[in-house]
Length: 342
Ligand code: HSE
Image (cartoon, rainbow, N blue to C red):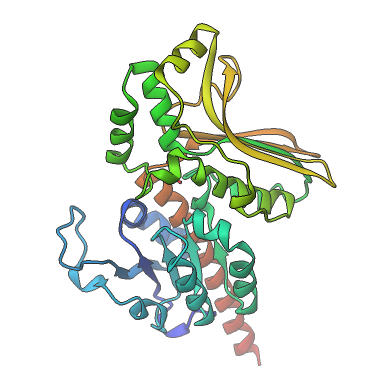
């Protein structure tokens, strides 16, 4: 969709969901407003926010008029250029994203479950409707790994992916191993800090990591493997005794996503592994994530940063919005100049 000349004084965004990621996105755009406006060349304005309960008391200060409980106020509003989906869950999130694209909106999401389950149809619908579909925040929170794979690393064939891709489970196991917290207490803290999914089963059973590995493989190996087909074991059966035993052996237990690409054959899994304490992934603690990639030209690469939490994830969502806004504005200006020449 070309941004209409009439409202080029701002690029309008509709936000679906105002939980941890939604508020983190809003805050990122607010606290860095001047810098973002200067970079894009116009203001980015979140004009509507879909919430379940518009009267709910919130700690964040947002004009009441921005809230709506009707998704069509965003999907069907011709003045909204970009829809950001941070509801979580496969449905209705996927249907909302597809509808928004069909209405000509660019879509940004942090929703790994929806992207991993419906990767092909989401990308195809974006292509068919000439809109952008971006999802940097869906893997590794604030770590810019997806854009790296699809842009500056595009000249590589990737052979291996290895990573710690879930902040909640990494936080739980770090706190259990280093501070003697119980599993329950550590999980509660991860929830309070805004790392965990609404239903933390997805975190602790490894499902969230399988979703992220599916997305990484789709981009790095050009093969979409449905997360249900990735052999997955979570951390629920790991005991304090096992963590102590690993420690005595000079090891740490980490929930590891791994995948290799041998051309005709892909191998992949998500499972807890004992790593020697001097392994590069062993020092990745709490909500930090790390992604190791091996490309056939660049060789070994390691990305490291906060994989969960409102602001780190908000940074990635806001980055996608800025990217779309910048490209769109450039194209609109170009078209205007071409039009003036005729
Ligand atoms: N629940 C996820 C995690 C959030 O803990 O990593 C970020 O995807």
